[in-house]
Length: 242
Figure 1 (cartoon, rainbow, N blue to C red):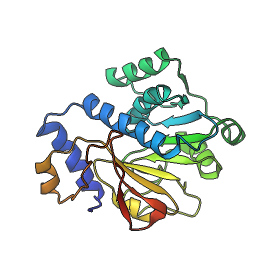
Figure 2: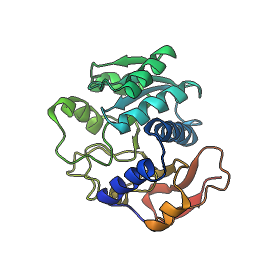
Figure 3: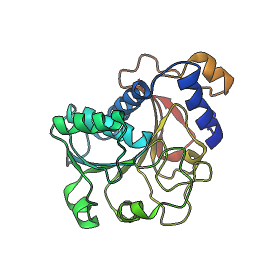
Figure 4: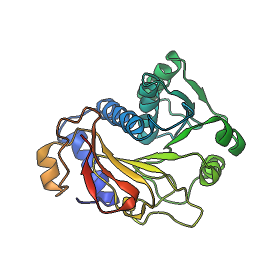
């Protein structure tokens, strides 16, 4: 299976929009839904606390997190959204409204390390996507400090926040996700995962686009949870999750 570099990931995204005429909200809904299913598949039977902290950034990765939070409610989780830097684009305003209409608290206040460790069973990291380039901006330093130190399992969406998209973690204190949900195709940084489960989510890559970039994606085989594969504990063993 091919792991995309940053420019390839950007190109694939642009082609989905421009050549294949997908809309942003269409792909975001599919991506966020697949993330919610992957989270439930990975932790639904084991996590003791159903309260989930969903950390959302200002871009499309944050939008995926907002969608995932909404679907997690319907899977018997209690998501709380930390959303410090908001965009006024209609899509994102609507996504926030949808979350709040389902009773999800959406806050700009960064939770403390003690609160996260005491109250939450999972953290969903939807801060930065594949367009991110280090270093982390100052506004996100407090939440990154919490994620780097928390003992609560972290599920990262597409890219572990703070990691270089190709080179992976930047130092020993970089966050260490327990689970990564790659979207469209894995990015090169996923090769640096350690002791983590790795899911592929989202069923929206046309066959011709797969061929153009030699993605060699696994078949979903009718999997109802929109998950294609798991790489367990960073081994090279790939399994169909059907």
